[in-house]
Image (cartoon, rainbow, N blue to C red; front, side, top):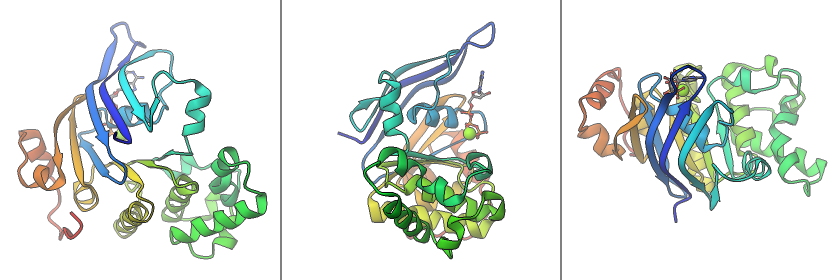
Amino acid sequence: MSLLQVKDLNIEFHDHIIPETVVYDFDLEIDQGEIVGLVGESGSGKSMSAMAIAGLLSRHDMTKRGSIIFDGTDMLNCSRDKLRSIQGDTLSVVFQEPMTSLDPLKKIGYQVGESMMLHRPDISPEDRKKRVIEVMSHVDLDEPEKLYDMYPHELSGGMRQRVMIAAAMAITPKLLIADEPTTALDVTIQAEVIELLKHINRKHNTSILFISHDLSLVRSLCDRVLVMQQGRIVESGSTKQVFEHPAMEYTKKLISSIPKVEIDDTDC
Ligand SMILES: Nc1ncnc2c1ncn2[C@@H]1O[C@H](COP(=O)(O)OP(=O)(O)OP(=O)(O)O)[C@@H](O)[C@H]1O
Ligand SMILES: [Mg+2]
């Protein structure tokens, strides 16, 4: 069985007079170790779908229908406690803007170790610190011992994004959802974050759902791609197939908007 199976997911908001469906009949399977890209114009429903999968859409003014089975758990019908035990343990999420995801008042080391503290109370504080420093060095953060006692505002944007990835990877999840993790970063650092995600995937066999507007990054990172338009998946297939032989006019347009730069295809 796949690590993640999403079937007929529909998400509807009720905070207006007329209910608004923002995701229709969304289907997705991800196997352990697979990297899947989710692309589509702004407002097409990528983040809503991803947040539903991560169990982060708990508002009372919305309905979620369909099924999301992650690692054997029914994510739409399980208890809050069960969801919390999965979040930050077997499933982690990295968002676009690390400054809003990191707490400005807490030290970096504490934040990277937070999910370990919650999910692995058996690990002693000393061992946790060791593991946090190790995981920070794995994401190429220099002088992790020094960073451990620093605050988010003392770090650059690229460093903060690495800290977020370190925090998401601290207890090696089975699935990492990365929603535009590189958008706020400059091009060189974007490429480094992509290399880091590839490395994490190879080393730990972590599955990744990668959401991005940057199709050249999707092409270099992902095994498969789903294309969303107005709340629906309109095309899906292997990265090679979707990029080389797009079926939909919409996908062709998205692809043709990629700036013409050298693309490293070696890992496709
Ligand atoms: N509270 C809400 N009530 C109604 N519709 C909402 C609400 N919040 C978000 N939406 C709508 O849900 C749709 C999907 O939004 P979503 O954030 O998933 O898009 P996205 O594909 O991630 O876009 P982007 O690429 O800009 O991040 C959008 O049309 C948005 O307007
Ligand atoms: Mg989004």
